[in-house]
Length: 538
Image (cartoon, rainbow, N blue to C red; front, side):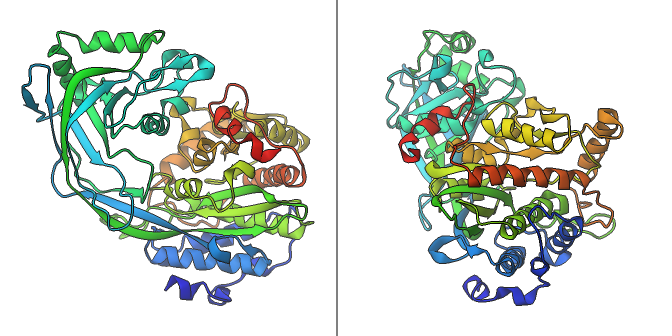
């Protein structure tokens, strides 16, 4: 049905908002509002991947881009990139047991939660039954050469299970970073051949945890271990005691760093996991303007088109649709309007791609698929600018970004913001302890080495400063974020959104028409990943 839907002028089913004339930087609140109104309509049923809302959303996006005269930017000359999602559902609770040096086997009744890794292909079994796996304690499981930290050394993890601490070394700072993420720890474990990754929970309240039975979403062929999970401190202490050791002492040694290296615990683990994998075929949508001089170099604007669908039960008013007007019909509309601005100006020298990804709400899965299967090489992608939830506020003195201090993109953006007459420049999001930089779609570009920028809602209002801005923003989040109340409203204040879109366009224009490559700052965690592909940009 999708193939039939996207042939020819699919636009005929929709009012073509994009057909209106535009000038470069002609960002218009009325058009933004109209796009949001369509995309958050009840008929889209909350834009859940694989449901009717996906068909309607993708058809609407294609219609707008066709009317603007953009080229299809997806696979095989089309508009789409197919994304294979897998809904993994346990058929029974997973079980585990461990054997110590004395040869005795101990069933783990509580304190071990196990889930199968992603299936390698559609139709592949999701069951995992493995016995006698050597258990390796690897401290944080972090390898950060520029910070003098290496938990692995030359250890070989082939066929083994690695146990890692949550978070990151204290010397890395209190706020979360890439090294504390499961993405980094899993990648380092897989690089060394691990078949399983267990996170050691030091939370005493985790002692009674058991294997989860709720479905979860991932992508087919995701670079996962055969299984992953969480192990409680109580279980780990029992394992250590079997060798006349104390787990708390081992943890303290690992947290100190220095000479610590991953080592065989002497424990062997058995796991038995049974899950089914339902394959859901969803899609990213891509439009592009091919560069006039360097068409094989790219700038990518992105936004996720999906939301969370329908509630299990209606609210008191009978509403059961999470319309997702702010999250993220607004960002989706912003990217479409960015395309309009580029289409109205001179053809950029680099190719500019407008990417709408699926399944962000299920764990950044559409952007993860794109990063694993890039339509345009990440090595020659100059930058990613991601728009997730436009700021729907009065005018602000600054632009807030997630993960401030990561790349040269912020410096260039700050210059443009000040030239716009906003003396606050670029600031952080105000909640660095939340690690928001690692929780939106730009992160998968960053993890692939591409300098990535994620603007957010600023709270330093021109009228009233932060004293007015903070409670305004906090009230918006309480009322609308992932709530049934996030529906289109006629009274949106697009002032800050228009301010931000203007400077994000100017920033993109500089990148698209320039020859320079945005750079990671020396303290950013992604510099070594980018450096590995330097030859492609010479």
